[in-house]
Structure formats: C-alpha cells, structure tokens
Image 1: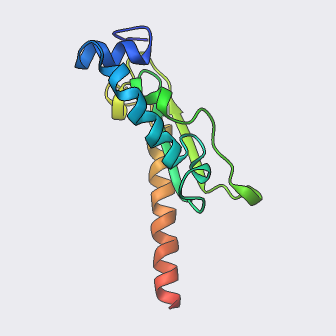
Image 2: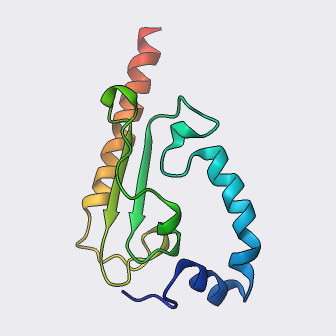
Length: 125
C-alpha cells in the first residue's frame, strides 16, 4: 500500500505536523463516544439507521471507521459497509482505478433505495 507512514497517527503527523495526532486524540475520543464509532447505535443516537460506510484501503481515516458491516437489533441491514482495496486507494476514493466500481455502485444503489423509500412514504401520506 502507498502510505506515507506506517500508522494512522504517523500519517496524520506527517501531513499536518508533529504532535497533531496526540493533540487530536482527546477530541477524537469524545467524538467516537458521542457517535458510537463502529456501532452508531451505541452512541448518543441509538435509533441511527440508513448509514453506508464507504472505505478505502489506503485511507488514513480507515482506522476511524468500521471494520465490518454493523448489524442493528433485529438484523435489519440498515447499516452497510463496503471496502475498496487497492494499492493507492486513498481518502474519499482518491487513487481508485476506474475499473474498481463495486463499492461506488453499492453506494449508488443504497442511496437510490433510500430516495425511493422516502418518495413512497411521501406519496402514502
């Protein structure tokens, strides 16, 4: 993988300056506690749903994201996850080769389904 440092903290310090990762650690801990990190229902919003985690293998933020698709109570698949893996797949999909489309297509389907569901609810009211 084309990473500029071996750890996410090392990448953060490399890009934003020495000490940045340590300075952000307390803020990140508060953010993760509030929003539940990999399990959003464990945070301040227990009814969270319809979340799609779109991650990339060489993204330094990958460590702050989920490692698997979280399953809400009842088994409803409302919290989805997709990981694109390649050499150079960086933040927000920068560096993803044009032929790796599975996750972007999955995200498109997810959003289309949400919009369709919202339109149906709107028509039914």
